[in-house]
Structures are given as C-alpha cells and as structure tokens.
Image (cartoon, rainbow over all chains, first blue to last red; front, side):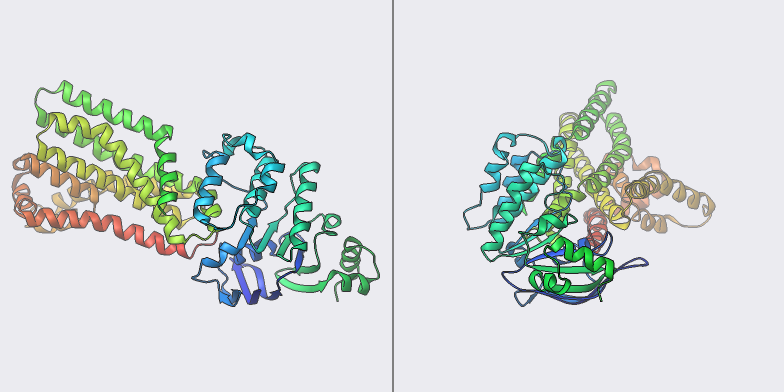
Length: 236
Length: 255
C-alpha cells in the first residue's frame, strides 16, 4: 500500500534519511522504532508531504505522492506534539478540519466521546495542557475512519486512563485490518498493537520483521525483550 | 481555500494589534483633519503618517503572523490541502484584514474631508501599500526559519523603502544637479513602492509645482492617464513579484 523507494534526505550536514527502502502492506500494524534522531519523524513527515525528500519516491496505492494531495484523505495523522493555532477553539479546529476533509464517511466520534471533548469545545488551543492537546490530535486522527493511521508517540503525555482508551482504539483498528504506523519509545505498550517491527538507525533501515519471527529469532517472549536483546547484541 | 480564508481573516480581525492599529489610524486621521483648517494640509499630514505607519505595521505584523502560524500550516499540510492554497489563503486573509483596518481607520475621515477623487486615490494607495508590504513580509519570512532574523529582515526592508531610499534619491539629485536627471529619477522612483505612492498622491493634490522642474516632469509622466495606469501597474508588480517568489519557495519548504 505504501512503498518507499530509496529515499534520502539531508538537512545541512546531517544525513537524516539514507537510501531508505520500505514496503508497508495493508493490514499490517508496524512499530517504527530506533534511537532519538534516527530519522523516524522525518520519515513520517516525508510520508505526509511535509518534508520533501532529496531523492527517491514514495507511492501510496501505486501513485507517487509528489504533486498529489488526494492520498492524504486516506491518512489519519497524530503528531508527537500537536501544534495548533493558538487563538482557535477546539470546536473551530474540529469544524475547520471537517470542512477541509469533506469526507462522506460518518465521522468516528468514539474517542471524542471517551475523552469528553464535547465539554471543552469552547476552550482555546493555547490554554490546553499537553495531554488535552494530544486528545484532540488523537480524535482528529481517527475522526474520518482513514485506512492508514500514522501515530507519532501516541500515548506520550496522556494520563493512564486516556492512554488505555487510545490503545484499545489502536488495537481495534489493527483488528479491522487498517495499515497502522506507530512510533514509540515505550516498547512494552506496543505488544498488543503491532504485527511488524521496523528498526531504523542513522537514517537507514536495519530491520523489518514480523513480531512472531522476531520473537522466534531472538528466543524471547515479548517484543520489548526481543528488541532490547537486538540492541545489546547488535542487529546483524 | 475559502474555508481556510474565513478562519484566517476572522482570527486576524480579532487580533488586538489590528484593532489598536485601526484606532490609531482613525485618531491620527481625524485629528489631522480637525486641526488643519485647510483640507489639503490635512491630506498631506495623513499622507505622511500613512507612508510611515502603514508599511511598518503591515510588514511587521505579517512577518510575525506567518511565523506564529507555522503550527497552523503544519496542521493543514497533514490533510488534503495544496501548499499553494494555504499560502495564498494566509496572504489573502492578511491583505483583507489590513485593508479593512485601513479603510475603517483612515478611509472614513478621508472620504468625509477630502474631495472624492483624492480620497479614492489615497485609499487605493493605502491598500496597495499594505498589500505590498505584506508580500514583502511573506518573502522575508520564507527566507529564514529563524523568527528573529525574519523580523530583522522585514525591519531592514521597511527602513530601506520608507527612509533610506528617499535619502539615496536626494543624494543622487544633489550630486548630479548639473545634469538633466529628471527622467532617470522618474524611473528610479519606480524602484520604491512608497515613493511611487507619494508621487501619485502629490500630483493628484496639484502641489507638484512645489517640486520644481522635476515636478513638471513627474506631472508630464504620471499626470496623464497612461502614467496613472503605469504606476498602478508597477505597484501591482510590487505585490506579485515578492509573493510569487515566496510561493515558489514555500512549495519546496520542509516543515
């Protein structure tokens, strides 16, 4: 569904993405992991067209995403730190995005209700706490029932109850066979949410495996242990 | 795009700085006409204030606004919206709100006290000046990612167009006073939108005689309808060129 072919990106002297190839198929739920600054966020931003790679192509459903914006209708994106216009209220943000999306699908209000967004519609974005902003981001990501979900550190900053709600929502999406791409540093919480692991380092792809195969190869029972094992022994 | 434009415009019109700017313009304009018994003097006072404040407020406010709306741009980009639409919506929103502020602040007293043609030319010039300096602000805010640098560039450009350029022309004028340089000066004045606006209005006021022989050349050149069309054309170019450059850069920008 998403095919990343040989993309490179350089910011000044820093090679952030280095000839990266990756194929993500429908129905997979992928954990994108790697140390800080390994290029995860740049990869995600490239997928969304916010960063334009120097080389290489990205295709979604066989169409190159350069000079093509329609594919973003299929993506729900939850940023690591949601940044919104300060003077807009939650209600205005939701309305505006609904208008831009112009989606025919009946919106998915499950998170909206669970997070109690309805009671905060008049609040301005700048007055919100980090966690509440994340709730708005999560609601927006799931609102239009997109077949592809890109979640950058989805549970960071959320209180335990809300984090649990979101995790259940992600697991549901996985079971529905949607393509999910999650980055997280909390390896233990990925267990129920992902079926594949992609490991990046210094802009390169080191590993792309099914979780079952990964556990079998390393002889561990959980994703967390398997990855820690990999990190300690080196990935080769 | 209309939807984005609506939110942007409403957001700016509610901004305190724009409200203060409108009130300030109104205060200056009303008192200028109230204190002077002669409406031409009043117009000249308004003109002088307009030439300094309108570009300054337009360029500074827009530069800061663009930087502060990086989040907004990012938010929109993760949805199916074209980059050029976002940039154009921001530009149009700023232009609309600054024009409304100018019309409410300075336009109303102008229409009441000055004769109709002069008032309309002044209002047109004020709106064009606002939009030109918004375009300049878009250019300087796309050149650098650093907000402080961007604001610095904007202030430098304002300083150059509003003050230094005049000095430069004057300097040339004195240095080459023995030569017939009226025509080159006419050409040079097209290089600064502020001067272009001033000449347009001064000629309209018929005080061009005070500008000596050059005034006559200006009158010859700008006074006829061709000159008027040409100078408005040049002012439009001052909007289009900086904005187009910034748009091309924005299309390739990494966020």
